[in-house]
Length: 83
Image 1 (cartoon, rainbow, N blue to C red):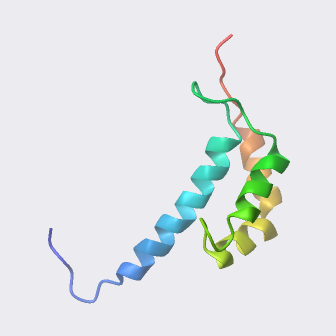
Image 2 (image 1 turned 90 degrees about the vertical axis):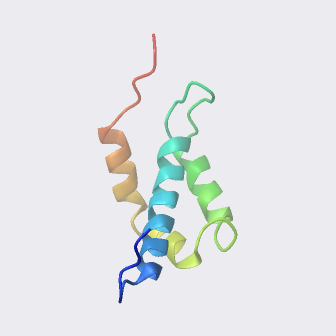
């Protein structure tokens, strides 16, 4: 692995945390072969309860401030569950 001089690895950590939180929202709010879809309020509660434990507090706060946008994007890409 080549390390770049001046590269800010903390940016990658923040990016990873953002993607991780978004992935949890997406995964829990959609049907998967190994689990049922959670209701949106359950997902929000899970993320809120993970504040400072599973998720960085400032990211949870940003998520909650923009939760309606997450819900709108989620609605735009519904599950494709098998019949």
